[in-house]
Length: 229
Ligand SMILES: Nc1ncnc2c1ncn2[C@@H]1O[C@H](COP(=O)(O)OP(=O)(O)O)[C@@H](O)[C@H]1O
Ligand SMILES: [Mg+2]
Image (cartoon, rainbow, N blue to C red; front, side, top):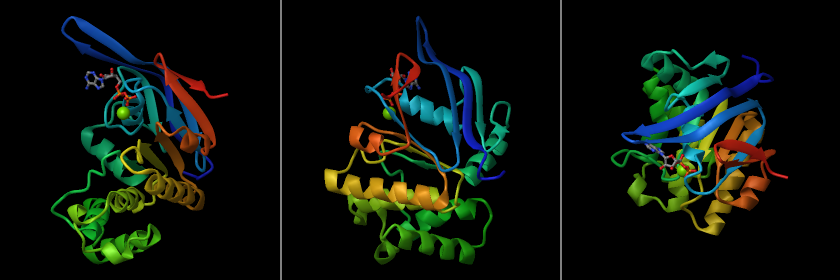
């Protein structure tokens, strides 16, 4: 699809978590439409549903009702394999805790999405080295996650999300676990990559200053998105 088009969209998305005797509606009719090159922040109290929203947009969970579109594909009704393919090709996800695989080096972790989609080891390694250079980790290629600082781990996680050059990056409190200075560096990196790659970026964050630096800002409250004044 052309980069001018809508990359992520959802229509009337509701998510309800049901347990015996208890049913909690976390998302109550969310509509979003995000073109390439636009960055969206979502703030909201803990438990307001930010992670649920990002997981739903990224196809990690299905909505209770409503529809989600990623790069023009309606995720509803896709098989697990099709969903995996769409996510691998079009989406990068950055979590609060890096989720790097502990037994693999930074280079191997970053090359993983390319290997999974069937690229050769040589190509995957070459691309992983390039993106690790861009996030400032060319001197840490062989290090395992436990041998990296918190900021370095998060930069490696950003590199892993970006290595496929996805249309969209979803970041769930990507700097929530970092000190202020390191957080600022990772935030700057995300914004720079978003600008140069013209991706759609959606960030859930508690950091109001970071939230304000993105192009559209929402607060998630009572299951709905409210644009920040
Ligand atoms: N798998 C689940 N089963 C039941 N309840 C859940 C599940 N995931 C999240 N919730 C509930 O949904 C609400 C929103 O959670 P979450 O999306 O993690 O909020 P946030 O990321 O804004 O802190 C919380 O009340 C949480 O307890
Ligand atoms: Mg959360």
